[in-house]
Length: 158
Image (cartoon, rainbow, N blue to C red):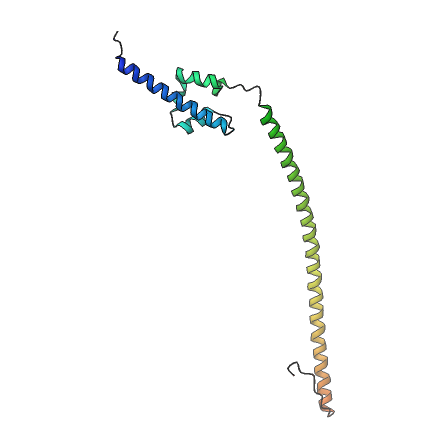
């Protein structure tokens, strides 16, 4: 069996080391950003192929950082858990307040619709009353003219 040339072995080792540094750097960045890191996140961040993450030297770094199949799924970080509970409680409170506001607005809207409807009826009644009064005024003006009275109505222009 042939031995690999020493330069090839050194080149492969250099590439492995660079790969591990890139992966560890991405893990550190994602941890700093607060991510619960998955292999998919690392693939997106590093642009490495999925198959690379199944190689032994990469599996070691995943195991060390508890990522992928090495992740401890039974415990959740207490701070993250507390933040989730706090945010959930706050969102539920906001939801209840929003529902109360919506209900109040619906009731206000119904009152305003009823008021508008009532005002429309009054407007219609007053419009009819005005037309009747104009007709009566016209009849009175005609009678006064026949009887010889010179009635001058107040003019809005003068």
